[in-house]
Image (cartoon, rainbow, N blue to C red):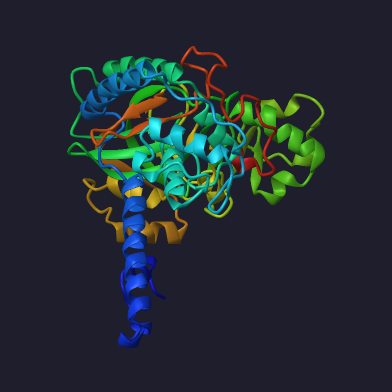
Length: 423
């Protein structure tokens, strides 16, 4: 299959002959325009950066970005866009001209792109860039969340940057270790950092609004392969009891066993699910990556909140923009890459050994030879030295701006259809 670049840079010229000189000349002109357009679109894409979210470089870049945004405000900021929701490539509307100006003002669109009312590839690329900077799926179409983010006034974005500069200063402090991991909760993103650059980056599932992931500084000390899962009291009360009231076979189907204080297994039929009796028992799910709430692996982090990081059998969440789905623990996309990095200095734990342990289903614990510092942070705005600024929803309302900056949802969701989505 031919790539778009191949098509735009000459392969189609083979269909023209010297006898079609005028046509060939016109084609060459069109080809040059298409090529320029392709290059412009390529330049407007957001490139993956190796600069960690939590770093002295990010702090310095964010400080500089405050001045950049203050200059935007001094020039009058940007105007809200209206009548643009649903617009996409090929759309024609007077609203596109205002959209272009909005994107130019924030630096997402080159002013040379013009003032056409046509939603062309330049506008689409600029919208994709804007979406990527705000944690929104980069579809290039003007979705509802895109419009909401675009209409946040510049003065609020400045305040957001100022709040987060203070956070970054306190977190960076006197320096960071050569090797550490960071989970940025509002971004639902985890980075493994080594030597000042991001080694691996992972989408994450973090705590719901009413079951928030805590802020913490700790160390990863152990990886549990093919673990049991013991349901926290909050999950028993908020999720398992309501599920059993509606679906009496739920525990059996999900291989969750009930144990009393003496360690004896108790049949679910002996429990009154329309009372709080179930809260007096321990609920443990059998190992098994295709069903167990922690998937194939749990990553232990000593902390007072009882939270940890883990795999999940529900991989679909990682493709969502809104990944605030857990009861406080953090689920990791591509978890094998993450634990390979965690265990790189622990003898006997090559990628081959890790993969073999996943396949075996055997309960094995791997103690890290060198515990890895980890930080669960709350940063809703940051920048990188390449001049790219990122904003995320203040999902837990920690910025102190109230509802001035709308978020996707502040309403706690109902219990998920599958229990494992609660952890």
